[in-house]
Image (cartoon, rainbow, N blue to C red):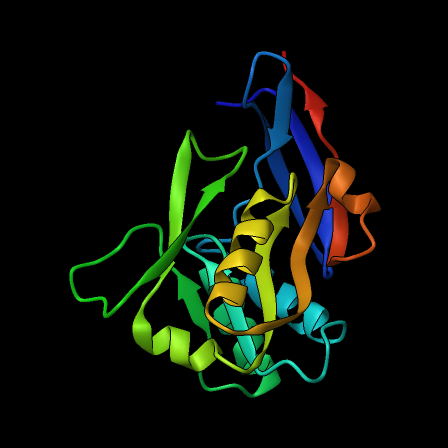
Amino acid sequence: MADRYYRLKVAGVTRELPILNVTDTLAIAGFVMLGDVELVESCAREIAKKVPRETEIILTAETKGIPFAAALAQVLGQKRYVVARKSVKAYMENPIWVKDVSITTEGEQKLCLDGPDIERIKGHNVLLLDDVISTGGSIAALRALCEQAGGRVIGQAAALAEGGAAEREDIIYLEKLPLFDAQ
């Protein structure tokens, strides 16, 4: 159990986030949207005010971005969103994939799209969405996957920009999330 916490207020919702070591020198505030309906819905309503109006498709990565993408799609009146899966599944038709490295996932992973999702993206304006953008690795992988599928990335958005990502001018976010020294 964490002995340090960070108080975060985002989209009118306050949460106490545990500060957890991810390396010998780096700690992060554990922001988890999964299962938090109030947080997800509030963030979706607020980010919807900032995303490009010409957004046709929302693309997110499995897993933590899924509820956020679902809620945002609903706010924007979209009937579908697309999830890049972490592994190729037996039922996938002609999947494509890219490699992804994230500070919160051990090692390298894949992000992949199924044939029907590739067709949904091809030729459309795509918003890349994640819960947190930190190093930018997952968003870069989503961008590469979207472009490989023939989509046009028109925005990159997250509920939070962590650490140096808050200085980026090419992302849309609601609040900053600091990084911490490991203890």
